[in-house]
Length: 187
Length: 226
Image 1: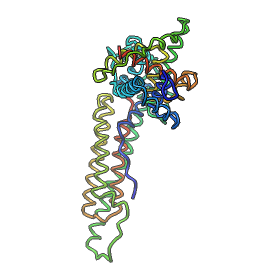
Image 2: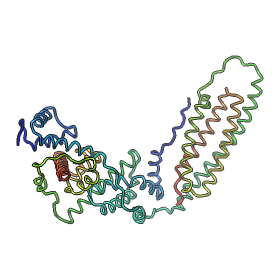
Image 3: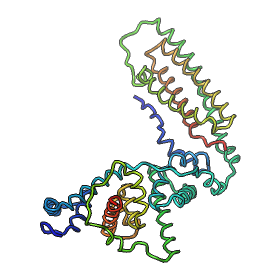
Image 4: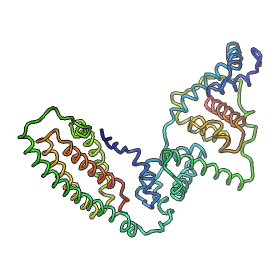
């Protein structure tokens, strides 16, 4: 039997929107923006811990995506490509910020501040907003590893490659972030 | 404090690593022995697991304002002006489709008439035996047609939602060609109903449906009129 044509799915058209956008179609690019802005903003705000800065970075991500769309070959989902681009934009921004301020924000003192004395169960059912605030208050290095690993699902090896550190250091940062969050939410 | 050979700090680190499934059996045994004897570390392990669950349930966040205007203002102007792009890419594409559709429909209509005429003559002649029904006929049966119609309905829905993005001339060409193709489909289907065993008619119907799908796919993917 002659093969019937396969129906075009909406996901395929999302890729096609990327192709159209790469040709200069701004409406297609706006559709991509509408589809992906929440996920990219969520990543940015959790990575930097500040909504206003996250909005600026979200705009930077989409402008950068527009500039680099020619490099998107469609062999991965557009969302995956865009997400990885956003991670790079945020990490580069942090490196620039560090150079500007010329200081290290990841002291070791905050681990010492953890209290092992008082143990109370976490009030998790109403934790949502508190947890967001606690993530925002983490030291930047620990926050980024926590967000990339526990929220975004990257592996230690992937995160280590992004950050230019060893996977052992990455695991240590993750444990540190979790313990700091536990301490913050127990206060 | 130490319990069962490892310190609390080490036990808590292992409890954290176990959440990621990265613990060797020997380490797991040491951790379990420690947790059995240390209420504080049991509480930490429980909290870390609940924290992991709560983290997985965090909802997506939204910006306080629409960021698109700020993004659009920063997008570089395309090298090729959009009007020129439409003139060189879109219109010829639609014209070629229109020409192809007209040629195809003319051929289909002529072919259908000839086949229908021959079929009428043949139907009055005795048939030697059961005719084999090649694979193409199956495409023209109700199941095959339903598959085409599903795909067409899906594309029609997409094109309908994109109508505001396309210019009026493109939409006019599209509508005209869809009418021509629909007419050809009706003609083929009627001829096939009169001669259900005709593989040639089934193939013709196949081609007309293919042309309709190709036209709708092209319309779904046309650049926006901006």
